[in-house]
Length: 220
Image 1: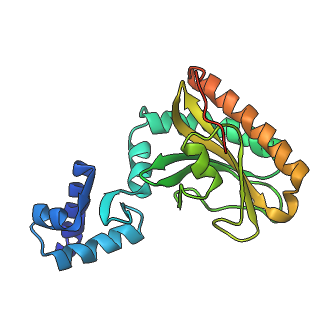
Image 2: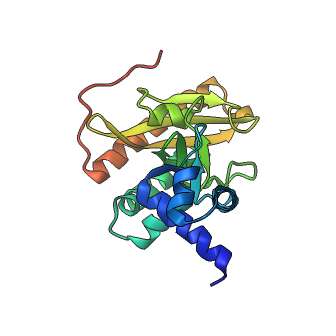
């Protein structure tokens, strides 16, 4: 194994083992200089294996989550994705738009599964991608906002999203969303998509055996 690859894996192992760590600690634990560690961490960040927040704290990135789900067929993420796929397929059939499953990781939403729209102009390609929780429909849902959340143009121009939290009791486990071109998302379409996402969340909750929430937080 090339020495540089070994160093990168060592850093990744340190970040995953620690949960959260800064550059100095990661470099010390891996026996590297901060300059060398930073170079490898930047490469890992670009590939999605680590995430760096605004305070310079590193944690496992979406690529690690995907690998963990794939490696553990009986793990919670794998079960969530398996249960969600038919629900996503039904949601896309009902709305005509692409639908997604996402979970929260640090201050980001990680997209884990999708059902793509069959339309020639459609939204695709977000599985494995992360977006901020702040200011996004999926982020508001994952933070526990009640009911369907609608945002337009926050990540990509001319794209609208409607998202709804999936909860087990009062704990937000994941969120489902419908994403499509804004020119198709007029008021009536947004309202209909919101109803469809709400129904999809109910179907997924039943499939997973989740308990009904005992309280909810209204959107201001």
